[in-house]
Length: 149
Length: 158
Image (cartoon, rainbow over all chains, first blue to last red; front, side, top):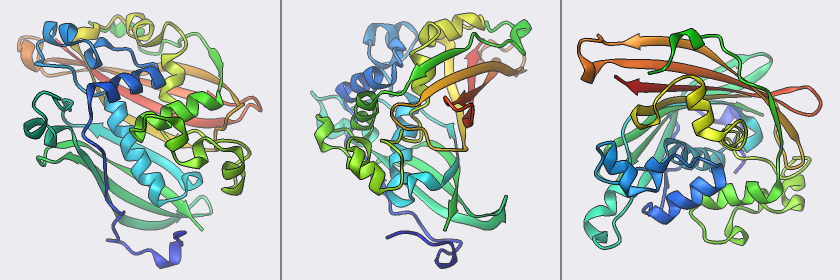
């Protein structure tokens, strides 16, 4: 499945990648793994004190999921740039109200090739990337650049 | 509120060793797995990593966020150093440039500075006023090579 510059076309899409519904346990696991102990992501009392209904996912957790989507498609060594804007907050699924809250916590990452060019002696593609929840709300948008063989 | 006089400020320099188990733990979090045995072998098995062309187990694309969180007083230390208020902060943008792979066993030195600070909106409209801070972090390996440059933008509500 190795991608080759000459075979990839502008408009080609990355295989979409969908997360499991994000639980509070996933947020705690990411906090411990990354060291991001902002209480906004695990402590309901802090989230409520700053005016939110509940805790929200780390933006970098969503970007990390997007990174997994990208490196499931292109060889990790080829990535040259990866940039995102965070657009909206992600609330985790409520386990006591799973059916009505799972869609807000399920993230699908999609991307497509928008440019092919040579730069610094490398053959590169630029892809636009978006992550949305299952309700269609955009979580982040951005791009990545990869150098392909 | 973030203090505009901090523009140009350089944070203390820290070094951190990239630990194999920490990479597996990070990937388990991103892949939403309960056990590091269940993750992509590239991120837990040296032989799989070597077969894929790396010297050792590589770090995933956003792993370098953790170098800032695990050194220099972590998130709160960084935020206090620019005078910002955690309860009003939003992370709005993150950018990475990759120059060379970072693998388990590497020792990464992080050099972070405040490269931009500006206001958005008008102070009189508190709900629309934002103070923007941009941090640039150069990550340099034990051979002195710049491996990743990260730019982090956050906004603080007025």
